[in-house]
Length: 160
Image 1 (tube, helix red, strand yellow):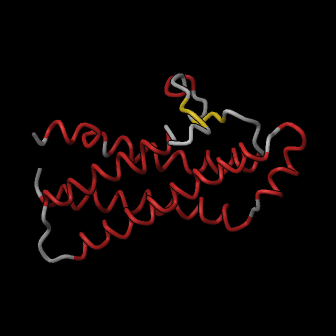
Image 2 (cartoon, rainbow, N blue to C red):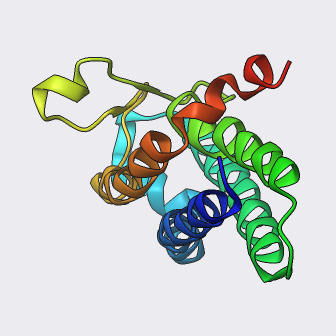
Image 3 (spheres, rainbow, N blue to C red):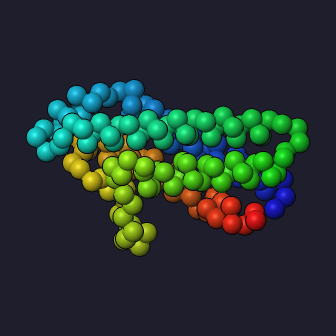
């Protein structure tokens, strides 16, 4: 894979992650845990919603780190393709896979989503509709990024 192709993947990564990160950041900056608990009423435990917010913050940190690293690679006069590929593998595992299979197990990917037309992210607990809406908005660019970077899911195996 040539450096032009890798540059293209880096650019797509910056674009898609920026879109998702901006949506997540706006959401996190506009809500509090208490607001979400109040919206759900008695249907939710505070600790479960707190974990959802923790996971979103974690994803935002990973996304911001990835965006910054990809932008730095793109500004270099000569692109180290191997370093860029390693960064793309990191993005795939920490941003894309973590979005669909979060560490804190607060939501999961519905495997039927691909052929049934429903959203892939399903929460394990009751959450406010605005949280579902925010995740649906983030899901599209992350899914597109997943398709673009799918090769990097097995990057460690390919590089040996």
